[in-house]
Image (cartoon, rainbow over all chains, first blue to last red; front, side, top):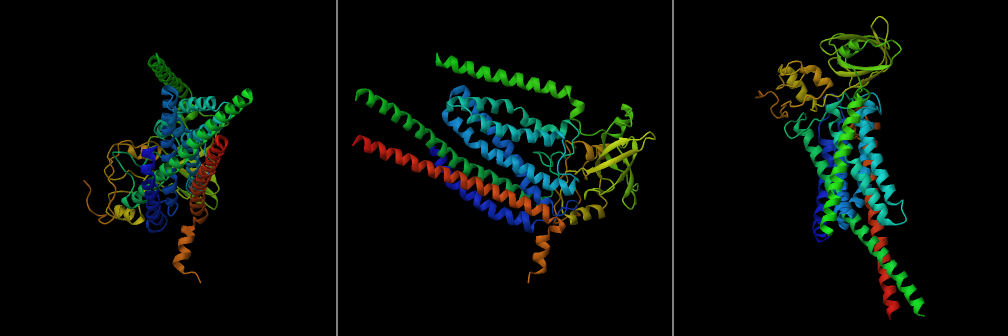
Length: 236
Length: 183
Length: 60
């Protein structure tokens, strides 16, 4: 938590800065695409949201694994705090993708491997959130949700490689470590928005982890209060 | 004592993930055909598709083959080894053009013509400003619907529109000097 | 009077009805989750403080 408190102002500041620089470039100064025209601007939101959805899933799954194996309470809290943010980014990825697909592909939605596996990830996020609240004993809920997060992790590489393994309507990746099919003027807003989304996640994560920690403390305090009252009644 | 329990939990989780991964791989292989979103004209020819089957076919719109008669459109769809004639009535997506990869949904009629009731355009994962595209075309180093300069693998024009180009060493185009020769 | 430049910008090459909702829904969602997270943190801070002072009261 000390580390989290130390990076918090930096992450928040960087997020504001990256949005302030990235949004005008993404919306105004970057050029329209030779084929997609102005709709390429939707990609500056869609791609970072997709990347965040997957990254946060990996973070959530690792946190869940550490929680299940080593009973690391902090890792469990990070996973729990991440889930709604990851679900939101996945939803944004889907919505922005649909808004691009309608004019460009000619359809809002198709059931190809990429779109379907992304939708499954969104549902796993929702399932994780629902499962965590479904039990009387919060610890049991956390454990069940953590198991679901681990089961669902197989889906994330499927999302990534679906466009290579099967024929899909969705195009393959334009970017990898070794190649780029994107001109520099378009890479700049894309990377700025990715950075902004990443820093935004870190910022919100710290806030949410603090909140989850407090919730646990409140629970404990209530428990000991009840226990104390019962003890007092027994004596009285 | 607690060390061994933690270790046992670790092995348990790892084993579970391994089994899960293997299971998923098996299921995905078993359903290979259902996950495929479209067939190429070659695959359609091999499969002897009957006219009552609704299928999707994908390929490149052959250059110079598009004929428009009001809302009626016909064009040739090719995977560079087999070609099919596609007939369609309706609105086309904005990315539809000659040389572009598209996916059509419909039926093969007895004469072998594909009657499409929906057409979707595939995007080719290339992003650049119009001026850069124009400059590349002018210098003759690239034509729309073809692989970008630097990609010299044979038969890649098909995979370019349909399948991953994998290791395509396309250098991002520097807009300041679009006519500069690429290595 | 809106200038021609602003009009063309807002028009987004005819794709206004796709580009602007994408930006709108994204910014709205990000702001919403930020505000929601902050408010829940503040509420829990207040609740925790109340519990602590209540305990101090009990002990006294």
